[in-house]
Length: 338
Ligand code: NCD
Image 1 (spheres, protein in one colour):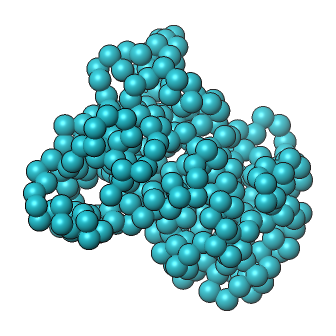
Image 2 (image 1 turned 180 degrees about the vertical axis):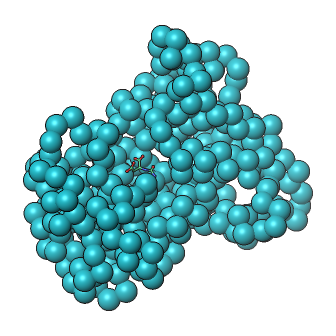
Image 3 (image 1 turned 45 degrees about the vertical axis):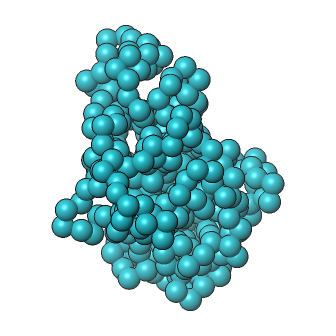
């Protein structure tokens, strides 16, 4: 199914083609069903090792990668900064080289420095997956967002997506802008002037509409994506107070009357309730926040499968362990691991 998927690492959405993105999403779709079964495991990555190397706090993303690896029968090892030798002064490169010496098939890395995963990709043989690097990219978040939109709207092309909030510090915003524009959606962003860099408008060829007011960005939007106010990345005061931010950029139910009928609301989490999003929105019928989390596992299964499993770019095509004639037939029919 994946012989033409030429990708050794997943470092960002920017370098992917629309076809590669669609292939990742289609593959993720075939994995959705596994998490609904009583026995949530297939042998696709049996005998493969995935290391989750997290230098930043994470609940969703780290757990999601770990569950994804385990549902594919890979051996998953988690390393967080407090337990790694980095806290003893080891460099990132030395940590990576030492991990490489244990022959992992894939290293999933989250780091506060933009470019850290790219740096590892230049020296490691293992497939490197970016799980968020500084304010640069967070490709699997954009993919799970796209899968969620596709699930509810059927397609991405022609949709209008509003991105609201702290764009400056958001790797989620960057990855989403690349992905959405490559798949034909239009994007408008809104946030305080200090948090929406002017160069953001020229970030992609097609351009992004930059609005000052939340209300202007969400007019006719099919999708409203809210971003967290990233207080831990803000080294200076970007707006007077959280209260003021909430007044101007907090999303309330009344705002949705401006959006398209049946507009959906998304947030990558973790959310600051009462700041960028009201509880009536977060817990309401338009919110897909928990669907995003569910879809995150399928997306990460697809990424691990394509990079470390049968779809692996380099080397000979591997087949999922235990595959027999019947399974091959199912794969050909598009029902992977049915
Ligand atoms: C995002 C991240 O870490 O970039 N969260 C996530 O991965 N679900 C967004 C955020 O922290 O606000």
